[in-house]
Image (cartoon, rainbow, N blue to C red; front, side):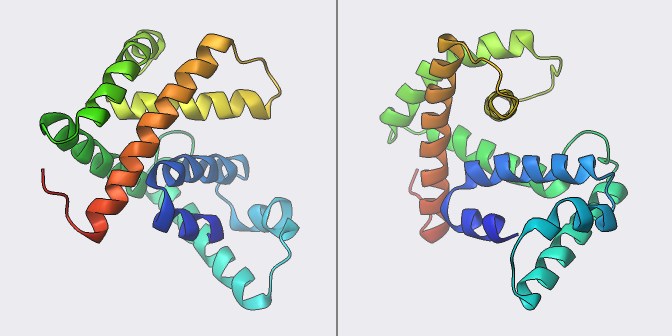
Length: 180
């Protein structure tokens, strides 16, 4: 909750990855708030008010995951909405002649996207979702202390640059709509 609040104001791409991580943490506790309290939330040193808000936030997410049928896999509607917002902005940036640097970054990442899509099991995943899946997968590999090849590290760096720029444009667009 605390990290999500901070990221919602600073980096939409990192917020997406964080929320996917939260979904997996909730899944590891079988979408049960009591298990979350015992095995995860209890480790945080928080004042009573912040603890209550955090527990309510996680409990609401547990309820949403159960009601939306994403208890075992998939993503919450709020995450899908964030991704859709980013995809819409991504497409507007690519279609506009005013953002050649963004287009250049995209074309640098495009071969990685094509390669990743060929390896993915989800043919319905869009380009940005493919990028997020790649970064999330790499994060999981690193958490497991598994090796990440130099080629994969380079792809992750390129993808991160693109998503970081997209996130910056998203923030600018929210502050004052971008003139495309």
